[in-house]
Image (cartoon, rainbow, N blue to C red; front, side):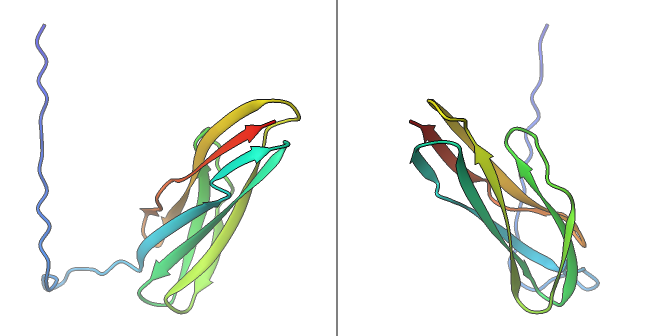
Length: 126
């Protein structure tokens, strides 16, 4: 049995937007894990901060999504200028040994969908 793989290519054009094109309110989303690498006693707490950048004042609904498929509850923030910071944490490990690797992503649900980079971390319990 043969299988076929289709490939697609995208072209990005820089310059003015076409007439009638909609500029989405959320421009960019960035996430950071602190500490990104932890070695020490557990449980350990990894803090995640995110910044949601907008091009006009708007109310944004977002949630944090984890590499283990866990999701935080949807939350909202009204952003009046360029960007706003949001935060969460993940408590990992029990006393003893083990290594936990993962990430959290900041997922903007509305007014337009957007995702941050995965904020990766590593926790090694000793």
